[in-house]
Image (cartoon, rainbow, N blue to C red; front, side, top):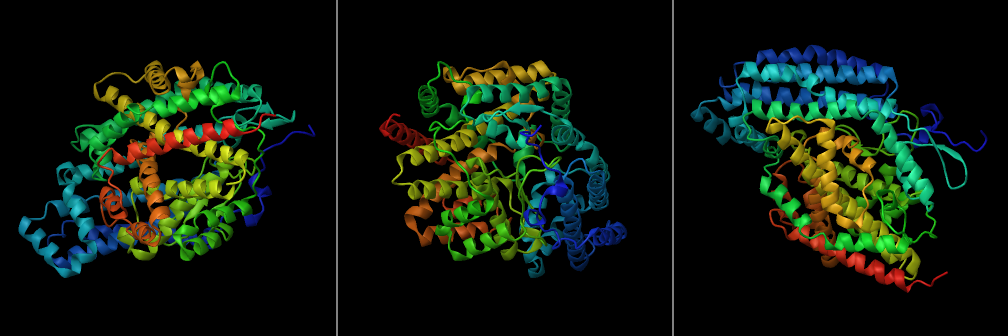
Length: 607
């Protein structure tokens, strides 16, 4: 069919639009050589087993061996997972990924004695080691190991748990392969009458169509695919939650949530505070949705009506190269070093830009200590969402860049809790830049305000609903209740009713949304999006209001890596997430944007 638009094969994507992986490995032969070296090298753990209390020199040597090996394993894994994500149907790269994971798990088994041995050191030996200046570079890392002592098992049991690491990934791997490689969503007739293949990458673009019929058809067809696989996906999710429960119990945590939050030293009160604060301040959301229904001229508002721009006659088109320059301009308040580095990376090989058949959906920033911070995109020039996604992932990548430059290997990794601050901070600056850029264009300002409101709605309100769903699903399993398809859908449907009230008509298909969220296979992850955007809105406001002082404080925060717990790092940056203040501030900011949008929209001339 002449008008058909299809998703290109990987081979059809120009090389200049793909990420450059040579900094990791020049070719697969190099990868294979390192694999062979590490396969032998991991046996070296045996030289330290049972000897960590022998002397400080042996203890330090074991730490350095483990860190050096981990660093090389991460390089091996990073290349394999990036190549696999280029095309999830490529069996060769799936094989590389599987081998990398297998080697990683074997290494975990062989090194599993280290933590329990450190924790079993006699108090006098531990104090002597920690007092020695040669341990200074590892002090916080070792303190965190001692903190896990109540949740660490004897060495033989730790080894057994490590042996099960690959099996524990089965639910997630099943869902990933089904969702990215096997599901087919058919084709949709777009606004121009063309048959376009529906995919994860263009689903939201269809939901932004000015034609309600196109939006409705895309929504129904997309969810029909999940409906057809609902039992399989529900089973995968249920066993993922059971896996979380197994590990929580094995490590003597009271709950799955306490286990997930422990590593970040985040109180469960922070999680509960987020949910209660958002639930208690939903009036601005209801006001916005009511206005959206009115502005679109609808008798009822449905989920597939929540993405289409309210100002429908402002076409958006921005090439990838233009998007890079827009990001650089928006982030100018962070200084020349930040923006120069970012521009060079986004145009010079950090990014795999466009969708191809079989490519992993969505977007992410990845990499390792010895590579650039790579970004996977499925960029589309017809949606402003792609611009926001690019600057979001750029925030992660620049965080990685600064952290790796400032910290040694053992501290270069930062937690997801603070990662989501760096990414949504960038989005906040982009919105404010665009509002200034179009200060004299009320129609474009309404368009940008609408977009920022929808972003906060999706990140703060919706992700908090996701977080509450995770909490409830895990509590069901912890009580011994079965997590069936109908139970899962029932829990999620009630949350939809609670969070959206009478402002949204809930189609039954929307109760399947909980079955298509990949982050649910990383337990208690999504709440960090909500806390992250709350912290980011506060910090972006400080940088714009206070200038160099707040900027330098923020850049110091990006350089902290993993040298502190995340709540403490954010206090260093200038925001305290232990209180409801940042969340209330973010909701207040959302409400002011809604008021501004309504006023701006009503000032527009009617045509």
